[in-house]
Image (cartoon, rainbow, N blue to C red; front, side, top):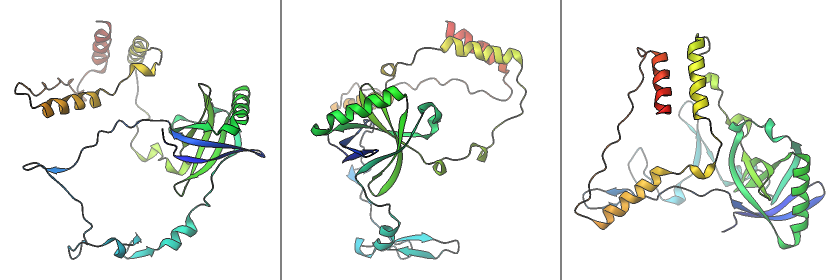
Length: 260
């Protein structure tokens, strides 16, 4: 596994040399865009919207569009001035309780590996985090962008969980959310019964990406060009609920389906 980042964790006056690895695997299947009739690959080109001519890279700049349609052109020096100071440090500046962080802030996990000479200091930080039952709130720069994160212990490893800045989250009140609808006791009790029937212990290994598996299976079938290949039968969709449907009846039917 290739390290994404090399640097150190700054813990008080202590520096811990580390390597950062991605904590996730991508489930994406790489598909190319092609012309259907002859399977010719499609190439994207940079074309001017005004004259339709292709624009070479050395003539391309980046600009911020103003309300009147004009652009403020930015060059490399402008980006350099605005970029955060590039450091190779995960700087812990605060310790907090993990439960204080709403799940909507959590974004991306990384695995932290110590260098050979830093194993003891790494273990010290790991045990201190365990004993304190806290996580380290930190800042780090990756690919010229500053990020916020937490350092936490999981399965004997220190993980860096990238978290979102507050201004990256949208306010739920920007959309139309019902607040004053009357829910009857019968409806609520029935909904709670459904939740109770479907309650189980979270075991991540039980959940698989079935879409990816089915797509790979279909690709292999088509590649083999078997004459007896048939298109899979479309799945029956559940009837969508309408405003006219009786909510209690839907809840009762849900409970009956779970029990059967």
